[in-house]
Image (cartoon, rainbow, N blue to C red; front, side, top):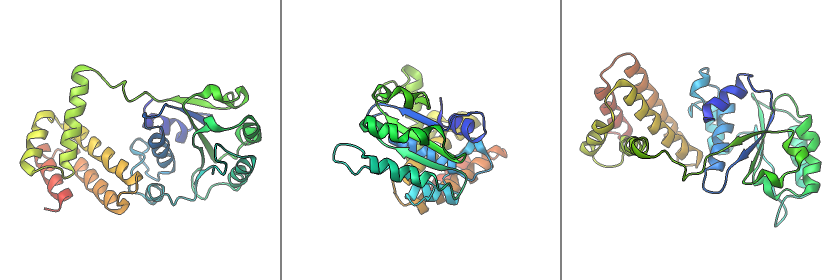
Length: 262
């Protein structure tokens, strides 16, 4: 399921689950997915389909790692979590959220011992109404059946399972043009790249989607969150202009100039 569909399901009340196993092997971007999901759930945008917006205070705090409502279970053992880690984690979750949700994240849940998993059962079974739990794992079979039964599973696709043929080529073309829209290469190179993939208004909006995805990823990695937020605002302004029937080529060229400061 697409990230935004999951955010919409949880935030819109369609999902009754409060705990999720995020299953994905190394290389699938599991950690990035969990960060973006957390950010999207905390996002304050009124438009649920645009979360995470990357611009609101909640998104900026999540991107900077300063959100009081996104809590990672700390691993104090050399090879895994200890019972005191689970106790501290559960105690924090019992305090509730400052904002919309309190999101508890257990990275590498594969390393949870049976004892620690049993410690977490009550938290998984009877969390506060505002608590969402996310357990990242490459092999859910390492988790107790009692833990798995209390969670819904989100399975991520491996990186190597990318679309084939023309769809893959189209995606690559948009990513190349989006990188140039953000500042890579000369203006003439951006213009040529955009002309190859942007044939309709929908294509122009898709190009902006790809650019925003890149800016959000950079924001989440700590790369100048303030500057990335400003870039996202410029992208949204260009999107609104195109949706109001401004010439798409003119809007994209202006956006490129604004993003590069020229």
